[in-house]
Image (cartoon, rainbow, N blue to C red; front, side, top):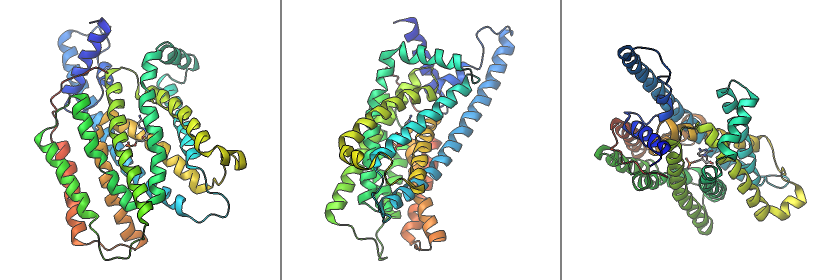
Amino acid sequence: MSKVDMETDSSLEVCCNETTNSSSSSKEHLIPPDSKEPSSSRSSSASAGTMTSASQSSRIKYLSLGVLVVQTTSLVLTMRYSRTLPEDGPRYLSSSAVVCAEGLKILVCCLLVLKEHNFSLRGFQQLLKEEIVHKPLDTLKLAVPAGIYTLQNNLLYVALSNLDAATYQVTYQLKILTTALFTVSMLGRRLGLYQWLSLVILMAGVALVQWPTDSPAEKLSAGSQFVGVLAVLIACVSSGFAGVYFEKILKHTKQSVWLRNIQLGVFSFVFGLFGMILYDGARLVDDGMFQGFNTITYTVIFLQAVGGLVVAAVIKYADNILKGFAGSLSILASTVISFFWLGDFVPTSFFLVGALLVIAATFLYSLERKPAPSPVKV
Ligand code: C5P
C-alpha cells in the first residue's frame, strides 16, 4: 500500500470514529505539522481544538440541516407553482433551468474556493491545475454522480409537473431508505438499532401525515400520476446512490467540498447541456434557451443552486441519511405553511401523530452517534 493510501486510510479511520460525522480535513488542520509546542501542551491544546472543532462541526451540521429544510420547502412549492402557472407564451424549459442552476453553483463554488485561498487568483489557478487537470482519474470519478444528478434534477421537474407537491414530497422520502441501503452496502457503515428503528418510525410518520382526508384534493389523471410516481422512484434510487458515492469520495480525500463541487458541477453542466439539446433542441432553435423565463423561473434556479450547495455541506458535516430527515421536516413545514399562511389546511389527528413521529425519529436517529466503521476505498 502506498504512503498516500495509508495516510488516506488513517484519516478515514479518524473520520469514521468521530462522534459526529465531520470530515477528516477539519481535524487535520488542528495541529500544524511543524508545531514547536511540547507534546503535553500540544495534546491538551489538541483536545481543546478537537472539542472546538467538534462543536463547530455540530453547529454547521444543524445550521445546514435547518437551511435545507427551508430550501426544500420553498423549492418544492415554487417549482410546482412554476410548472402549473398558466403562461401566455411558451413555458420555460426545465432542461435549461437545470443547466442554469449548475452554472450558478459552479460560480459560487469558485468564489468559495477563492475565499479559501484568500482570493489569490494565482493560488486558485494552481489548485485547479493540480487537482483537476493533473488528476484526470480523480476528476473522472465525479462524472458518475454528476450524470446521475443531472438525470435526477430533470426527473424532479417531470415529477412536479405530474404530481401535486404533497404526493411528490412524501414519495420522495423513500430516498431515506435507498440512502440507508447504499450507506450500509457502499460505505460499510453499520446502522445501530435506534437508527433502523428511527427509519421505520419516520416512514410511519410520513405515511400518517399524508393520510388521505375528505378535503377536496387536486384530481390527477392516472397516466399523469404514473409518470410522476415513476420519475420520483427513479430519483429516489439515484439520490441514494449519488449521495453516498459523493460522500465516499469526499471522505476519502483531503480536498475541500467546494473544489469537489466544481468538478461535479462542470460535468453536470456539460451533461445538462447535452440533455437540453437532445430533448429540447427544436424548441431551442425556435425560441432560445431562455424562453419563458420570468421571476419565478429565476427563483426556482436560485433555490435549486442553493439546495445543491447546502446538500454538499450536509453530506460533509452530517450524513446522507440525516439529509433525508430534513425532507421530512420540510413536509411538516409546508403543511404548517398551508395551515397558517394559505389557510387551506386543517391538521387532522393523523397529521399531529405523524408530525410527532417524524420529529421523534429525527432525534432518535441522531442520538446514536457511534456508527461502527468498516472503511472501503472508492
Ligand atoms: O434530493 P437529493 O438530496 O438527492 O438532492 C441532491 C441535489 O443536490 C441535486 O440537485 C444535486 O445536483 C445537488 N448536489 C450538489 N452538490 C453535491 C451533491 C448534490 O449540487 N455535492
